[in-house]
Length: 381
Length: 131
Image 1 (cartoon, each protein chain N blue to C red):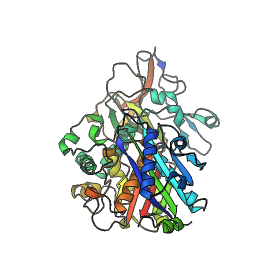
Image 2: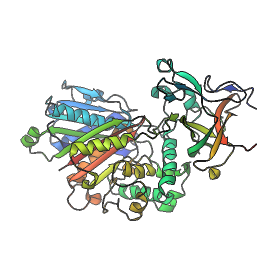
Image 3: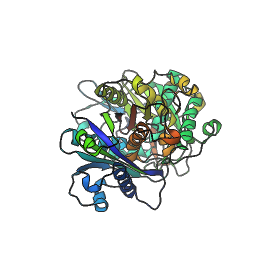
Image 4: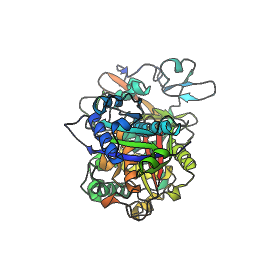
């Protein structure tokens, strides 16, 4: 497969933008990405994108221009952005085109997500009894993990503390005020052991990326970041996933572990080679567990890693340098591409106050969502 | 106590003095709970799950969920968790008759039917009662 590059990245600030629809935030991001790549919409030969709650992406052509390009709508839960990226990458790698766009956006109402059981192939009673909540899943997975691997609540607090601290330095973040550990630990309990400020909140935002073939990169003399690998995996048997009334007794693995292994294998590198990582942090425990699932540390090592600040911007492996979902909020269709946007920013050395020091050569991103799927993308320069 | 209440869904547990959760089992031995609706449930043998198990994980629901949650108008936090039914399957369930502080992973639990609201009953597990 021929190598594909990202030559433009655009973002609409995350958070709440009352006056703009989710799709308009996507269009905004597309224009930013085009500006960044020094291209016009007419130059885009293929597009893929989507949202979960803000409508079809292809309607954007009404605003961007009726150029007759093929535009694939993606509706793939938390992996919507990753799937859009993978689709655009494949369009170029297969030789179908030389320049493609991947876009993700969303706009959710306030408060916890309320999923429709039928859409997930589940019976009505599961929703009626109040057991079909994403927040519960993360608390249930985490409660067990903390007991088995000796993770303290204080460590959960430290993750959120870092998120808000990093968010303060990122222009596109939503929560940009640092918060002290005690405030986080003592905030309203949502699902024990997780309190309010350890969770991300449903939000709004849009992200777009311009992808190009090697030939085009040379032709344009573009400021390009290489895509080393993109891997998306759905759940294996025996895994514990969100929206599961039951699971098998025998532990069978996890989609994140599978996606991570596949992505590292394709890229021909390992976790020890990664300079910066963006990991799904629906809540602070998710970041903790995903550090191990993605191969960056052993189960239980996180306690020490956080105490030593190893995941801080100036640490050995900076994680969620823009504050992640906790500081940026969660517009489901946009979050996966926000991580890639942040990695492009870090690899180009444009992170300003949040720039990881030294030469950033490799960057890793990971999303996870219902009903048990993960997407990993590794970028390099 | 739950006699005059309507089960929240039919076919979820067996109608007998000592009820069991009902699951579907395929010919290769895999167990599915709840029994899938539609075609995927058709070729499964209906089996009764164990009335006792151990706590796999737990949490407390501290805020009133949005619809489709259909519980009592006046919300009070409830405990829920996953219960491992040895050699069978791990099921998600309400946990009753205890407090968050008392819950320990691995503790013994038993199956029970409990009121959901004024008209309906649902299933739960509670700490095993010593007789």
